[in-house]
Structure formats: C-alpha cells, structure tokens
Image (cartoon, rainbow, N blue to C red):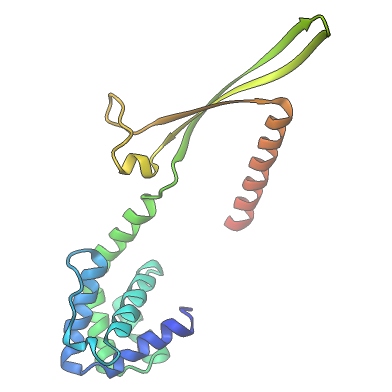
Length: 198
C-alpha cells in the first residue's frame, strides 16, 4: 500500500501514544471515520495524538478500499510501520470488527457523487431553410435532451418528480459543427475509459 511520506510519518506517531490509550484512540478514530461519533479530544492528543488519529483514519480507509483483511493490515503495520506488534494487533482487531461497515460506507460515498449520471438521451435534427432579401440560407440544427439522475441537487432534495425520483432534463441546441465537436469529445472520453479499463 503506497501512502506517501507524510502519511507514513503520521502513522509512525502511533508509537508515541501509550499502549493503554491506543485501543481507545483506535476505536474512537474508527467510529469518527464511520460517522458514529465525533472524535473528541483524547488524552492521547498531546504528543503525536492528532497525527496518530489522522494516520489511523487514512490507513483504515485505504485498507478497506484495498480489501485488506485484519490479518493483512496487521502484517502491513508490522512490515512497513514501526509502531510495535501490540499496537498493530489492536488496530487490526478494531479494523476487522468494523471492516464491513467501513466498506459499506465507502460504497455509499462512492455512489453519492456530486456529479449527476446520464440515464437517457433524446435528439432530433432540423434542417432550417430561411430566405430574405439578402438571399436564402440553409442550416442544420440539433435539439438534444439529456436526462440525468443523482448529483448534488438530488441529495439536497431539490429535484423530486411525482414518482419521487430526482431526474432532471438538460435541453440544448447546437449546429452541425458543434455536434461534431461534441461527438468527437465523447469518442475521446470513451477511448480514454477503455484504455483505463484495460
């Protein structure tokens, strides 16, 4: 697990917390990460306490994102961070007890994106012919409707239709050149997503 130098420094501050306070600190930090309770000023907040709390929070979130078990986390703590075997065991046990809640919480946060998701597209093309004293002109115009769901507005309760959903329609018009530019950008995004997926 690659956490960076600053994170490793925060985690290593755990060794400055007394052993009898570490279990309480680890449990309180995990509860704060899960949103169960606020992290109060602990007696460990003196020497390295807040840095240890930050290190623990980062470590358990990254471990859950990586799908590590309690044993894996304990081994990682013993190999990469010199905080002591007893503290590594305490943290691994607290993590193992709360791993499913932590994983569920990460899934909820991942789905709660502030960006709306595109669920449907409708479009029509119009060929416009106009004439005037200056001559006739012809142009193509596209009418596009994107139907989106989710996003920050839905979570804030601003979008609710009769069925209780939070769909929103975004309508716009564009010329042929603008449509070609838009489809080119979408193709580039698809290629980038395919490259990232492989």
